[in-house]
Length: 222
Image: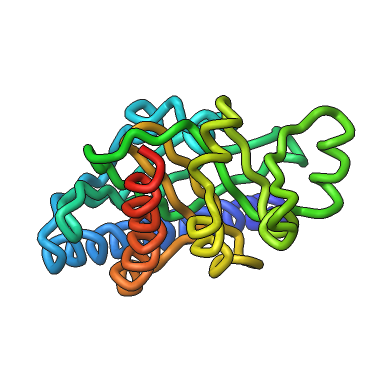
């Protein structure tokens, strides 16, 4: 009898947790819908960003990729997508779920080389270099090179793009978990965190400022 009671208590506990999780998920979706209305954006509860932007690093990592609570519209005259993106790496005890709010801009005036930038980890990136991991460094700008890992298929084009002015703009993000990727007219930005719907406009403004660094860079280089 005691065993039966324990099993029932456990089952009820799991049921309560499932109900609470469902309630919180629904409330979050409603908050995102309300934010979409305030911003004049369209809303998608479930989306397929991982298919739309499969050529980007973020959307090709891990497994179990999903995107939800996605907002689409125009911000400062630029086609903009904001949403929650989830994926899983590892399995079993080493399984890790990644969640982040992503900001995607599509600016038809850009024709950028494929490049990827993130905060540098001294230990892991030092090991990575031993095994041939790419990191485009600038002898004339050691502070930038220490702060970020920069990669690109066409290294000469990426070096030309990341001139002094552009590097200086990115240095404002030094020490933060920024991940940035650009290819053609599309730019993807995130900080490895989930942003609350109430804070989305201020974070979007910051992401837009990073995107706008390329306005002048494109004029200087192209």
